[in-house]
Length: 117
Image (cartoon, rainbow, N blue to C red; front, side):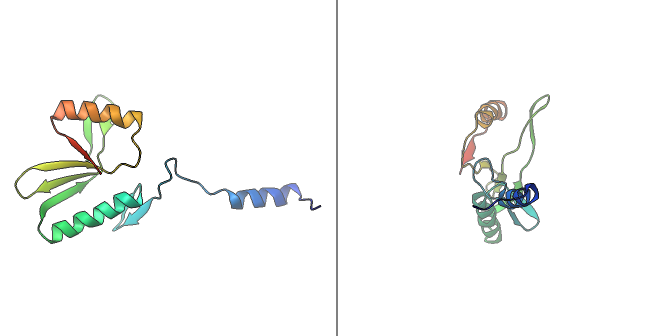
């Protein structure tokens, strides 16, 4: 039977603790932007390709919308289409209660639909 000192146990325990995301997504960095998931990073790459192909006029990453005093909503992207319209995009793996409430307020206040990918 093996016995560890307190110090050996702490060292072992520290090495085995790997911080996992609450929703099992992996933060991913591309072009100096850190995305909450690989899915969101992949969508960013898709938008870059669409922009280069002139399929869209442009896009914005995580714009901030003020819903009320102290209440903000940050969708993942806004796409600016060639016809002058915009699309609000949220890349979702899991819908929290907070997100569902903010989505309702946003859509009512701005009369825009959020597209979930």
